Length: 153
Picture 1: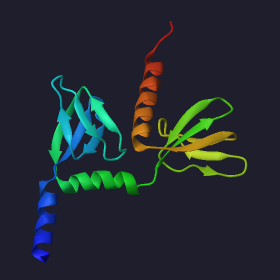
Picture 2: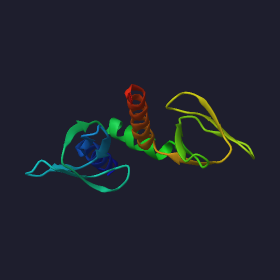
Picture 3: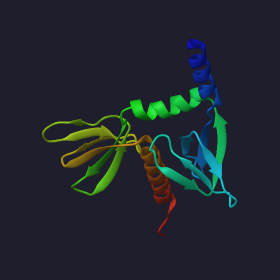
């Protein structure tokens, strides 16, 4: 009887398929079941969020159970390690990869875009996901680059 249970467990783990679905923006999603319809739209349930997804431009890659478990477990176990800081005086948004230090009167942190140390007297600090942090950082860096290269002469 014990052998039957062990064999059934091995077949269940080996028989399962695991996929990484990468969207057009390069964001990776993980699932156990992915289906592509006639129009090329990929349908799946995201293992991290539990959300049913439909992506028109996506690539599907079969991955190992170990890769799948590592990718989905990391999202469950890792606390948010990125912060969005809003300067309430100037209404400017900053991002930081390190936790800001706060006292009764100030909030201090290192700006992820410029690398400068910033001290604010009135700020709202929230944690954000790594994906949101990366998208925001890329957008802010591109905006800063455009601002530096644009001449108003």
